Amino acid sequence: MKRGENGTLLCVANFPANTGYAWGYIERVYARIADHLATHGVRTLVAYPEMGEPPRTLAGSAAEPVVLGVALDEAAAVRATEDFIRREGVRALYLTDRPARSRFYRRLRRAGARWILVHDRSSGERTRPRGLKRAAKWLLARLPGATADVVVAVSNYVARRQVEVGLVPASRVVRVWNGMSLPPAADSSVVRTRALLGVGVSADRLVVACACRAAPEKGVHHLLRAFDRVTRDERLKDRHPLLLYAGDGPQMGELVELRERLQAREDIRLIGYHANAAALLADADLCVVPSVWQDAFPNAVLETMASGKAVIATSVGGIPDMIEDGVSGLLVPPGDEAALTAAIVALLGDPARRRALGQAARERVAARFTLTEQVSRLTALIEEGFGGPCGAVTTRSLGAT
Image (cartoon, rainbow, N blue to C red):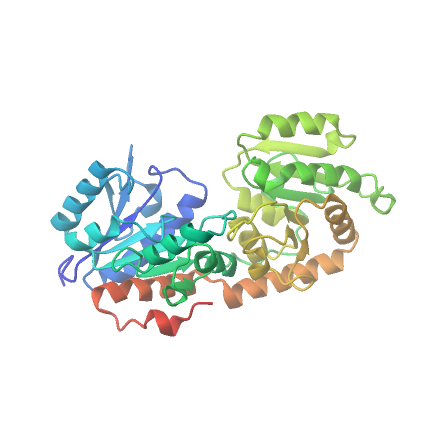
């Protein structure tokens, strides 16, 4: 079957090629979808606004990278996208973190895009519209062709936000969690593997690890102050816990200054960006995700759970979808440093409970959050735009929660 016989899927990236971070994960999803669709005669293109060199994450897959700036708020970019859709025979659009509705979607449909899927992975809260604004938003969401055919929400929180704040018809909103492949189970007889040893952490330290962007909404400043209290707790005075934070960003200077003011500054390591942060988390005794805003579905939580390590996280956004409090991890209120301190002290002092939570977390990922399941559901939704070339199930049968 020749390439493109059944049409073309255009995946639109909002970032330059090889940006890394969470975008690398999104590109791997594009690649898996492209490989599946290619066996049924559907070509997949991935559009980047900039591409200095071919995207490494797509290498070896059926996905073809192209340079195309799809800016829905710029008339010239919309015209260029229309021309591209006509020229390449694009029948379906896969947009990530773009609006669920746009007046330009009608133009893209007239150019040939029969199916528009928006994948909402965005974090944060939104203000619920009221009065005339709510009425206008409600009407626009129901204007033929102006709203995406399917809005994929990465968590129940995001799905509710699309319906309650975005006023998208609930029938068009489908929740599909992020997924990942389980890494090999760690050998519990190994005290430390090379990850932490490679950054100078001795094998006998109790390590609390955190990996995220250095930004106020990630709550790392709360973690530093909570850990300072942890080191002064009498129950851990002989255990010498160490906090290891991997990440960089606009708040890094502030975090460095904060550490220098803390009594536990010698036991707090700020190592900056680390290319293999997942390995550091998997090698730690305990991992903390201290977000203070509505995180959509943080991969740091999922990666740590998959590695079989205990996680303490805040009860925001999609995190409660991931962790059953007290069963597969611990949840604490955002910004509550006393609660965070108590949770860290409790788990550092109880190795058996840490192991039990970590094992339950890994089993939960295997049961609910696999990459294979995620890609299968996304592919089925995309196939609807091609008339179901692989016998795709319908959006309604997949369910909205």
